[in-house]
Image 1 (cartoon, rainbow, N blue to C red):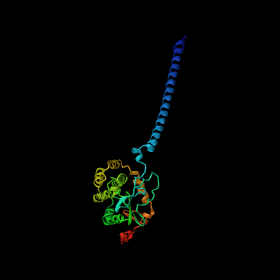
Image 2 (tube, rainbow, N blue to C red):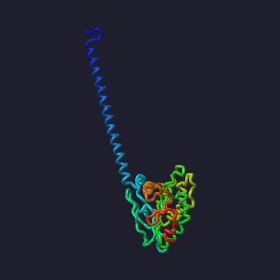
Image 3 (cartoon, helix red, strand yellow):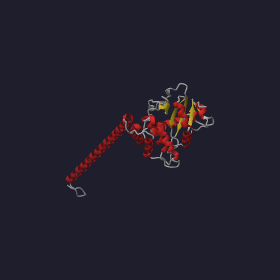
Length: 283
């Protein structure tokens, strides 16, 4: 029997079975796609979670680049500054542990410091005025330290990156200071002299890491670990943290701002008007 369209009953049944089979196949494919998308989404989510866990683990436990981001300070700078006192008639660094990340810097007693005037300086190795201060006062101050009449504490900070064509020279120099304090504190003062004697002009690109390492070596600090510390900028986060702490201290400000050099004598900021050496005790 045929219908008005000329198809038999069997043909119509066959066509219906083919349509049903086609719908079943489409439904199977749809479910397969959904399952793949769901599994893929879960997989990506799991990978993302694993990535986060790995990053947290590395930042917490690794001694490599990720751990460099912590603001842990260098050894021999428990106050965020390196301290010098008399030892057998000579100027010697006071050896201390470093400041732990997120810890507060603490004062330390100087060796042979009974009755000695405490001199604290905040300097930027990229600062021309700091260079002038060093030339004018450093020999006399260090002589008083050697005699046991004074102690000296030097805080390297970084406030002059803006003057060196986006090279971050001031920050890299402060990191170098921290590296030397950490690995070779005995040569810190001679290295500082090299940086002032070879200070690049403001407006230039400053010194490259290779030039910084050359000055450090010329100052007597030849430990290979210092060179690595400079290249890796190991104390980059500490430089930022220590500088920010210094800038935020109202006792170190004049008219609401901070500048280098800043000198503190027995807890009182030097006004740059009174004779400095008289304040220290040379008179």
